[in-house]
Amino acid sequence: MLFLILLDYLRPLSEVDTHMEAHRAFLNRHYAAGHFLLSGRKSPRTGGVILARANTLDEVTQWISEDPFRQAGVASYQIIAWEPTMAAEGMPDFSAQ
Image (cartoon, rainbow, N blue to C red):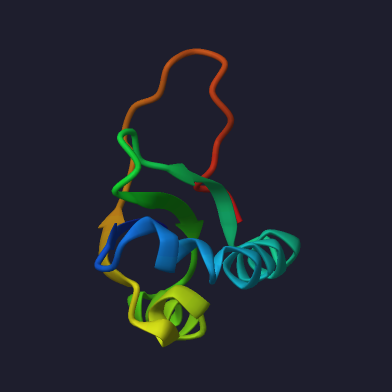
């Protein structure tokens, strides 16, 4: 199943940025494990978005609890379970495990 994870910054960017290196290491671990498929900043820079693949919401919730942004209290999270039913021609099948 796919999950859309929406991050909203709770603190000024100057404070968020002090945790950016640790946050990127967190992202890299989950990319290497095959959990995260896409990620990036919102525009304007008020937070971020992660597209993840997992078996359960509980699994994603556990991953997010380990995010340095969460641990430092600089971001809030909304997790949306998502089952794509249509895609443009040529799009990869992100739902396949």
